[in-house]
Image (cartoon, rainbow, N blue to C red; front, side, top):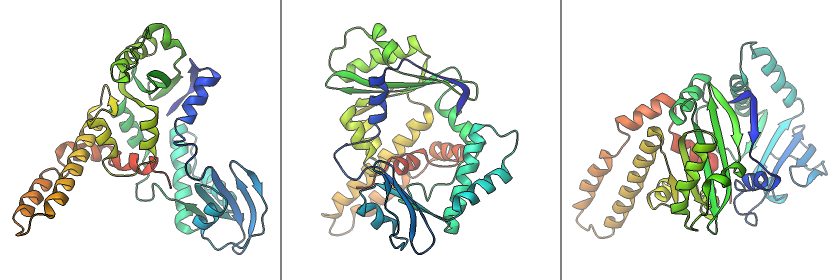
Length: 325
């Protein structure tokens, strides 16, 4: 997705650190880091924690990665048998073509990893995208076209206590993104902010367009709300946040707007149906609510988006951002 000459501009050490930290959720909650190990089928031969470093091997290997991760305070775990990584690279080299670009190479590598997971050569816990089909290169290109037009940008800005905490911009040129922009150049264009981020996001969006490129999608929220949403796998969490303006999307591509609208309508219908079920003694209301719920099943708009992408973007978003408690 990134061009060969991609540039990183507008970052300081502090702003880059803040950008990375915003994806980590609550720093005090839950296990951190991952566990990577190599086994011979019976015992662990090598084991590394991504935060703590190398761990003492020799433990019996039962295949229960959840228990191992819990024991060592990790949020995820990956295990492979001896020679598994060699098998991965051999398959990758055999299938790689000279004309494959970076996107095609990454997708090929992911497809081989999934093959080895299905074969049991690689074990992974948890499996956040186990039910999501792996995209193809044309599918990635269509998704990029739907989300961001050529010459435009994707932007995300987070506020903390009325101030702009961090911001990142991806600018598209041709088939990929040629710039990853930070917040530093924007301050000269924003002026003084009011302290109300629901008003100030407009000035941030204007500054992005003046500095980098016109926005195809802008996402703005408070830092704490964004971190909570990253850890919330509940269906409808993002659409609910958008509906009550805990998250502001401006502008919104049609694909995202349709998916959010339908997802929010389903959640509302299910909530109403559960509420009325307590009082509908004679079963008169339930059929009506069921008919209403069917009216908001995936319609032509969402089916068009899903068919074009090959997947429902909200399903992938919820799976990808879900965090183990």
